[in-house]
Picture 1 (tube, rainbow, N blue to C red):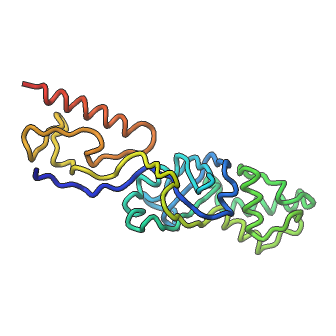
Picture 2 (cartoon, one colour; picture 1 turned 90 degrees about the horizontal axis):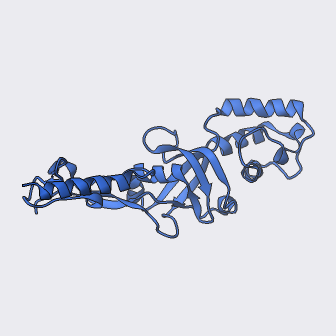
Picture 3 (cartoon, rainbow, N blue to C red; picture 1 turned 90 degrees about the vertical axis):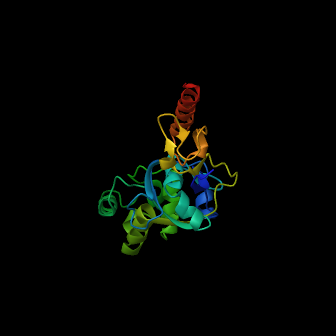
Length: 231
C-alpha cells in the first residue's frame, strides 16, 4: 500500500541477568537507582527510578524505561549487553567515601555488614560489601583503602551483563510500525492510500510506563473513528 514500516522490535521488558550474586537477592527493591547501557551514565540510554531485583534479573520502572529508550540498541546486540547500575545516584562517589571514613572514625568497632548510613536495603549492602572483599564480621576499623575503592565501584558503577529479555517474555509494547509522516494525525488517515486509517500499535509510537501506550491507542482510535465517520 506504499507505506514505510519501521522494523518492529520489543519494548518495555525486564532484563534477564543470570548472575547469582544478584538474583539471590530476589525481592529486594531500591527506591531510586540509575541504570545505564552507557558506562558514563550519559545520554538517552540512562534512566533513573525504582529497581526491583527478581529471580531472573532486574525489573521495575527504571528498567522498563531503559528497555524502551534502548529497544533498538538492545535488539541489535541480540539482548547481550553490558549494564551499569548506580545504586545511590543522589550521592557522589567522593561523598560515599567521606561518609565511610567518618563512620570508621566514629564507629570503629561496628561491623561493616551490619552498620551503614546508606539508604540501601541491608541485604544488598551486605552483598556489595562481600563483593568488595569485606569479610563477615569485619569491623570499620579494619576497612582498607582497597576495600574502599572496590565498594565505591560496586555501589556507583555496578556492572552486570544482560543475557536476554525477562524469562516470561512479557514485553508490553512494540517499538516500530507505520512511519508517522505518512499519517494525517487529525484524522489518522493514510497519506498514501485513501480510505485507510490507523490506530494504536501499528503506528511507530511507543511510550514509557505510566499509561502512555494505552492513551495512544485510545486517542488514535477515537480520531480514526471520527475521521471515518466524517462526510
